[in-house]
Image (cartoon, rainbow, N blue to C red; front, side, top):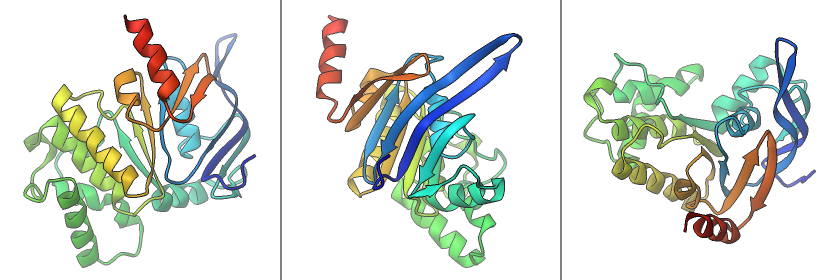
Length: 242
C-alpha cells in the first residue's frame, strides 16, 4: 500500500446478491490516488466505475478489503465518522445535480455548512464567493428551475467546494449537458486541478476522460489499464475509431 496516498484501496471487493447469483461490482481492486491528481475512471455501463467511486469516496462501504483516507484505515469507522470525513474532506458532483428545487443557488451552496458550527454570515459570504468562482455571481437568488443545466451543475460544483475539500469526486458531470455546457464544466474541473486540488472523474466518454492526467479503465469490476499520462490510452482509442 502507498503510504503517501490520499486514498488507497487494498484488495477491495464490493458484492451484491441477486437471487442465487453473486455480482462482483468491484473485484479485488488495489489502487491509490494521490493529492493533486486528476484521475478519470472510465468504462462501459456495468463496469463498476461508479461503485469504485462510491467506495473510494466513503459513500459506500466495501464488502471486504481496506480503504485508507489520508493514512487512516476507515474499515471500522462508524457512519458518523465517515460522514464527518465526507463533509470536511470530500466534495461531490453528480450527473443529476441533486439541488433542492425550491431553494436558491446561494442556499443550495450553503448546505454542507449547515452541519458545522459556521456562523450564518460566514456561510453566506463563503457561498457567494464560491458562486462567483464558477461564474454565477449574478444568479445568487435563482432557483434551479430558473437556471440552465450547465448553470445548475456549476451550482453543484460551488457546493462541492464550500468546505475546501481535499478531493472532488464527479460522477458523469457532463452526462445531462449539451456539448458547450459540458466543455464549460470540464474547464472548471481542470481549473480546480491546476489550483492544486485532486479531482476524480467518472465517465463513459473517452473525450471527457482525455482531459485527465491519469486514466483508469474498468471492465467487469476490474481495473484493466491505468495510464499515468493518458498518451497510450488516447492513442489506442484514436486508432480504434478510424
